[in-house]
Length: 198
Length: 122
Image (cartoon, rainbow over all chains, first blue to last red; front, side):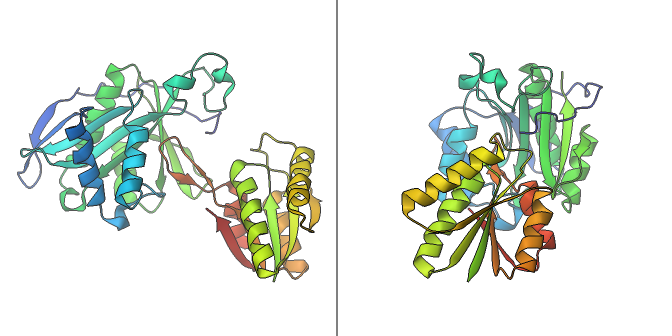
C-alpha cells in the first residue's frame, strides 16, 4: 500500500523448501508442505479457520463465519499467491502461511505499474500472514511454517515481503525477527516489518 | 445530535459519508461535512468537495460543507471540541492485499485525541 516501503539491503538466508517433516516440541509429527489446490485442500483449510480461536485473529483476519472464511480463502489461495500448510499425520491442517501480492497477477503489466502498490524498483511486493491453531502454538510449528513459506517464496522468485503485526504481539514479532524481518515503519498502530528474499 | 464527518477522499471516507448521511436522515441529526487534506488520497480537496456536494444534492440533503486546511486529524478534533459537536464520523480503514484492516493515519490521530465519541464506519 505504501509505495515507499523500506526493505533491508541484505537478502535473507536461504530457507529450506517444503515439504519439511519434523516432530514438534510435544513430539507430534508435523509436515509443512505446499497447499494443494484441490477441493480437499480447500475444505481442510475452511475447517481449520472455522475452528480458529477468535482471540488469535489479527486485524480482522481470519474473518468469522464459514461463508466469510470461504470468501477470504478464495481470494488468497489463487495461483499468484504462495501458500504452505502445516499438516498432521491424519491430514488435518493446523497451520497456514501465505504470501499475497500487492498487485494481483491479472492486473500486472498494461499500465498497472502506475499503481501505488508497486514498490520503488518495480517489483511486486508480497504481504505475509501466518496462523497456527491455538492448541499447536508454542511448539515450534510457526517457526517451521514461516521458514517453509519463505523457502517456497524464494523458489518462486519473490523478492520483497512485508507484514504488519500488532505491537503487543511479542511472540509474533520475535518470530519475524528470528527469520530476518526488520522493522520498516513504527508510527502506526501496527508495526510494519519487511524482508528481502531474493 | 451534531455530527462532524471527516472526509479526505479515500474510498473508506466516501463510504463513511454515505452511511453518515443515511443515519442523519433517519435520526434527524445535524451533519457538517469537513473536507480535510489527506496526503494519501489521490483526489484533491476541491475534487472531494465537489463529490460531497454532488452526494448531498443527489439526496436532497442540507448539510454544511467546510474545508479544513492543515493537519487533518488535529483540525477535526479542534473543530469538534470547540464547536460543540457530539460525534466525529470517519472511514473505518482500508484492507490490505491479504484482507487485514488498516486504520488510516487520520482516524488513528482522531481516536487518540478527540474528546467526542468517534465512529469508524465499516
